Length: 96
Image 1 (cartoon, rainbow, N blue to C red):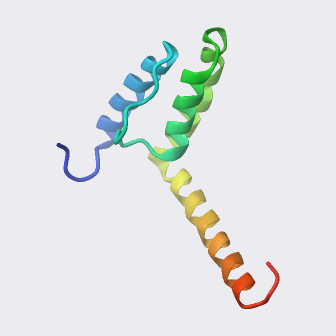
Image 2: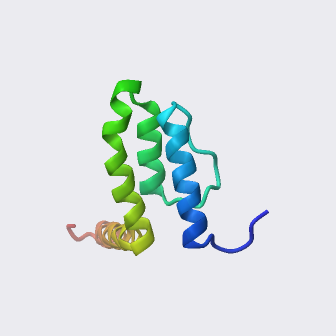
């Protein structure tokens, strides 16, 4: 069992392993350390028709780069903050 966050090297190894798995139709295993954006692209590759899978690989690399540089998390944080603000406005009778 792993404790703590995986290193960038461990994430890279996992990403490449799961990407190869997806290219043959296999989905990612759980608790793999990849963020939602990256894992969603892996699932999309696995679910695609075999002839279409390689065309999705660049999107997986972009998503993974966003995980490593923190931009995926920053975007998710902004989305959550916006959602919470809108929720609070609705609850207080304001408009979003």
